[in-house]
Image 1 (cartoon, helix red, strand yellow):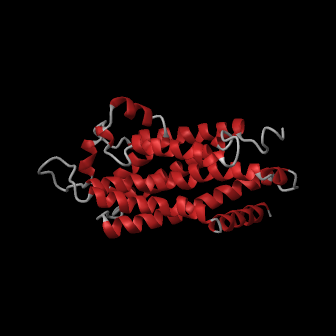
Image 2 (cartoon, helix red, strand yellow):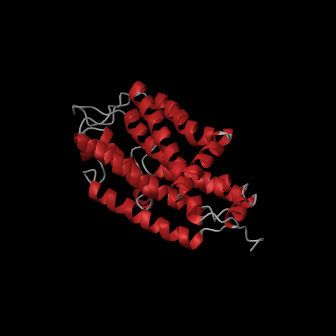
Image 3 (tube, helix red, strand yellow):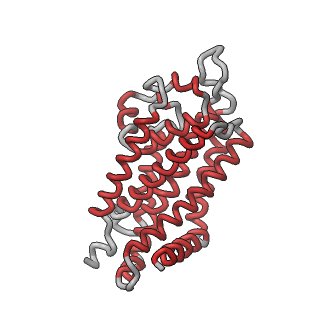
Length: 268
């Protein structure tokens, strides 16, 4: 019965999402549009050392980061923007006043985000393979890495999105508060530019957050093994990627428990 409630709530959340054109465009289609735009700008600029084979282009490097950004968009940005709107409209207050267990509300959000993340990943992979010469993982180990990086990244972004939803004072303030943070993380985490070419202080800043490690983990999946020498540490550091993302899952859960609010401050 509880599982049925969670699935039903997830279905409701998903239907509400696809019926909102703004959310549909900026959560699912915007990363695809960015991939086309920046992929066209970068073209076939080669970023591997001269003579090294196989070669990696800047567009290939970029699209791996955009897949990570798509996961962040469906988890962090989506929830940090939509939850304040629902709080402002009194939706969360009405949910809290119903006999439905509170965890069902969060389970519905998580199921909706998982479905959206899967759709986003499939769309971005289709574009990357079709236009930017990205090859799908060819070993079981790479598929497994892709799976755990995506799952840990999605969990951490989802929990952080729920926790950060309490920062916006009103529903209208949500996009203004969340969007700049997402853009800053993208520019500093090796999405639009090579991470090793960024200033040292910027690298240190980005290393505090999940997106940098998601990008790094996904590069290990879609770029050649030899490209690991171009990373700052000289390797993809997959154990550290797993450790940081797992730590953010735990930290995100703690932040949710401490910072989530069902009502606005004026309602008490």
